[in-house]
Length: 376
Image 1: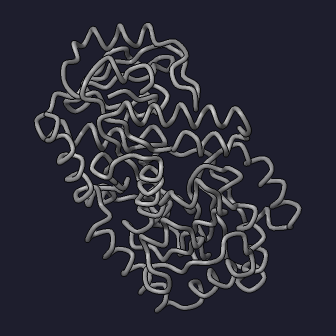
Image 2 (image 1 turned 180 degrees about the horizontal axis):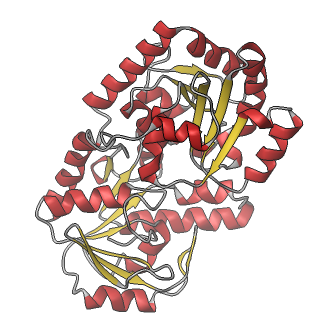
């Protein structure tokens, strides 16, 4: 497996590589992971039976490994003769003809990610052309949503070559006890206060400016409500300034980056969880990992009515869905959950039942093993 992630469960923002590697290792595969090596990290490590090989070479988002020479030497050193699992589209261009079979795991569609970073015109056309070539070089494609699979089919990929594996927690992943009281105490939140929670990267497409404006209405109606924003990102400074301008800064808590192992305690301590993302080509096809985290802990969810989210949850039953970018509609939905205990309880229970039935890693991992069985 090739990934940019330094690879230590609980210490990074994307836990999918670990889940996949752990599943394969427990199924009897000998799993070697080649990844970047941050300063101070061991070069070699055996993590619960997974062989980790860290390479100190630069990696650029949307470009991949700047130089593949040390990487290729590392791959040769572990004597790869089986399946190669690639986590980044550009790297497929270099590795597609070197080993077979090759599985490409698409977490962030390359061309859509480029669009979000402002790439346009001829440069975007080149990225799309290279992406299509990379897709064709892979023997099988894994993606995180049915909407993305439909995109790949429109690109000419055969249906039998594409599998959807949602990135969900395992059934027992969040069962470790976490202290809700400690979370409230560490951020000075009094016990009676109600908490609205967002967790994730603070980017422009996440709709957090909409959430802050919605919170001004909520705070007026329910003054003891706090907004807890768990995560970090390029928009944090802008959002903190907006909270100040809206005179709600004292009731909005920006926690900064938190490890995956800490997230359950924040979610457990909340009264309602929110996904206020704006509508973009990327957010429309992404189910959002946080959605499954919220479901796993049985929390009522208010989310933007986006393509893949609407496939996973049902409006009014397992979540309340609102028009993206509409702060008034968002505030009304959040207030409804905060002020109606029966609605809150029923939404949380329905979301949890969906998680237990289908949207958990125990179920999704069966698809991964099925794909690997074709090439083993």
